[in-house]
Amino acid sequence: MDIENSKAQMRKGVLELCILAILSKGEKYPSDIIEMMKESHLLIVEGTLYPLLTRLKNEGLLTYRWVESTSGPPRKYFTLTDDGKKFLDEMSAAYRELNISVDKILNAVTQS
Image 1 (cartoon, rainbow, N blue to C red):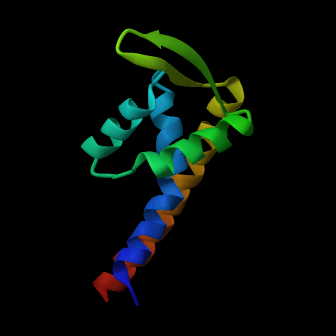
Image 2: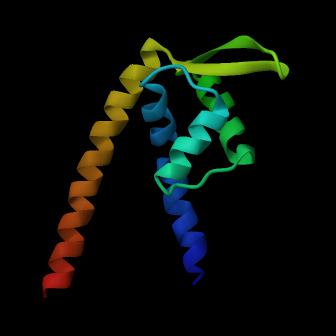
């Protein structure tokens, strides 16, 4: 079994939650999201981020606005919608519950 593939699958499962959490603090440009994730040691590349942002926008969880740039093409800045905030709250609660359950199992196994 390939451990790197398994670790990548676990990361993919939380990317959406992390993106929404980052955007809950205000409007962000995609490179800002990538940088914040990198600082938390959760690596993501543009080829993964942009499709996720598009899907979240299409689901009504995000919106964006174009901002003119003095050093190139206009930039797309993303923010959460009201539905996105509600979804983040629900996903955060579900993640916390899952984390508690997994920790209980891991602790029980390591203590035996």
